[in-house]
Amino acid sequence: MRQERNNIFLGIDWILVFIYLALVFFGWLNIHAASITDTNFEVLDFSTKYGKQLIWILLSIPLIIFILFFNSKFYERFASILYLSSLLLLIGLFLFGKNINGATSWYNFGVMGLQPSEFAKAFTALAVAKLMSDRKYNLNLIKNQVKAFFIVLLPAFLILLQPDAGSALIYLAFFFVLNREGLTLNYFLFGVAFIILFFLTIYFGAKGIFISLLILMTLSVIYAIYKGGKRFIRFNWHKVLGIYLIVGLFIFGVGFTYNNVFKQHHRNRFEVLLGLKKDTKDVGYNSYQSELTISSGGFSGKGFLQGDRTQGKFVPEQHTDYIFSTLGEEWGFLGSTTVIILFMFLMYRIIYLADTHNNKFGRIYGYGVASILFFHVVVNIGMVIGLLPTVGIPLPFFSYGGSSLWGFTLLLFIFIRLDAHKNYDW
Image: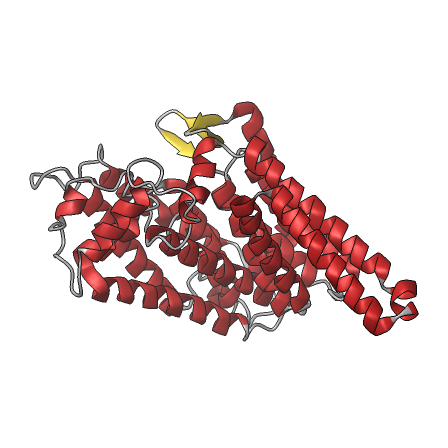
């Protein structure tokens, strides 16, 4: 038995591994298509984007072996240390980070760079699982909810300061985990309401929304007094006033952040999304060209390396966040649907396996992995097809970048290790 446990591949869910390999390989093919400039190319040209990505893919093999080398108890025992290490890496960016495209999100090591926010997601998922798997932890208590929110929102806040709003947005995925573990749905509904309020504030302005809500609150109070009389005046008026003050602070906070914290290109993206301005040549150029590129693929696509819009570089930086447009043009509706189904099956498989875990730690971490992947896939594809604003979120295992690939590999294979050991008492 001891000898069996030393086999790092014992108990591995090979279905997850196969889906991972399929997505990585298919992603590399699309990076290849989006990177070449002519038909005369070398597959092993490591000076190209697809060549560099191939190096990161090959280096993922020792990373996977390293992850599988530790048993599941290691990740549970050292979850807090790993989380604190990720916070230190994020804080260190403000001292030693390199500014790229207006965001200080990278450490520069000469020929390569490292984006710690890509790894912080996995370590935050471990920290959340560690906190909530404690036998004494009760999510119904406010103080415990605050602890969970703090663990989730602290790295998001540090990432937002870089500023990298897209990567910070991903941490909203953890609220799916908290909800599945018993957090009331009211938080989710409040979140949706505040998101709607956020966009309304941008569209109409903070003063307009504030005055509109004041009129609505006044009418509601008059109606409630009419129906409830003295009872309402004694017990409920302070609740209405408190909610209105919180909402008012949020509205003016959004207005201040939008006008003073967001960069102009961030504001332009929201304005294009909300129809406040029409732009197909500047800020809206990427999304517009991406939509045209995807639609040109039709049902079955133009074929591998046959995408004239991809070869013509109509979509800037197509190999990164807009890689799905390459997929849409060359592989068409059939290829795009196949990849989406692969992602759906990957997330379903993770949730299915998480539900079979004997301990809460593995189950909660599995929910975190599935939620993060879900958020990335939905936001990235929604952005590429023009349903969501451009926020710089990569498509897992597809988008070009070593930090992104390694971050998702780390996220997934820690769960694969936890799942492999779920039937052992280590």
